[in-house]
Image (cartoon, rainbow, N blue to C red; front, side):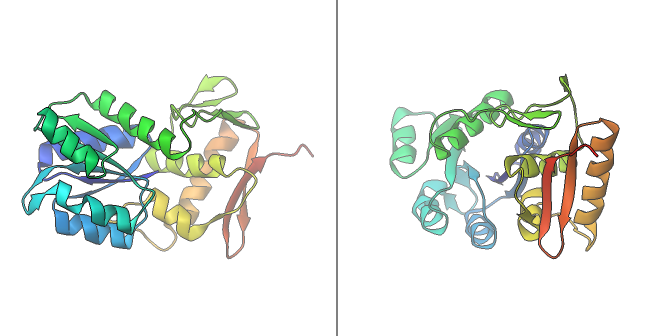
Length: 227
């Protein structure tokens, strides 16, 4: 899933960005209100992590605009202001959750997952099993033939999307949008090379799945049929 992080403090931004990446999210980062609105105009996000105090103003002022641009987006505000009135103001203005600094990075990611579960209806989704792969959408854990497996960040992002849409073709444009941030230098053949690497890895793991190319459309993951 793609997340927009709005944070003007570089050290804090790097910490959160690394944690999100290790948890399977693709994170784009901006540092101002103007950049936030522009990013939301250009890209689709599941959630925005929004620092309240930014160089060009109070982020509460842009919450209505964020909702107009992407009505279903989840908003988690991050701030050093921990007064009850401040939290109430942010939540009443449209935020879904409110995290005060300093915070534990693991707790922040847990809050992100909780917000995304509410987006899907409030209940934890069941594990997805395809071939020898079992994927837990809530914890984002992946096991192959009963063993937990680690993948490269982008291989993992691709695998997650294909598993969530197992048996259905996923459009190339959607895959590119979900896997690569807007700061990434994406070569023309980047996606096809990534698919090739993931295919080899899954074959080496004897995962019992295949990634099919839907010509001029995208890619599809399904259980491998025995010949």
